[in-house]
Length: 66
Image (cartoon, rainbow, N blue to C red):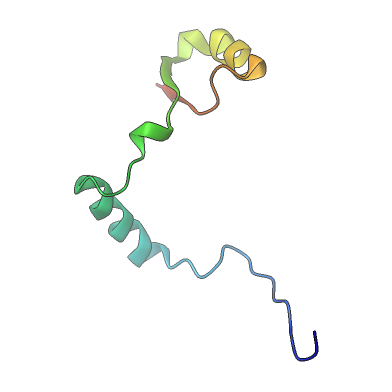
């Protein structure tokens, strides 16, 4: 364990101006699978249903469409 150090970080080494464009490009190419991470999309009027689904564990990652 001698000579080892632990460093913390805040937001890693993200460079938003570069990284967001790169990630959008990957998504557009089909190489970054974001849609598969979404459990469901709901309207704002369905908010109570979304909360119940999240609390029960049936829907983890929801998108609310305004």
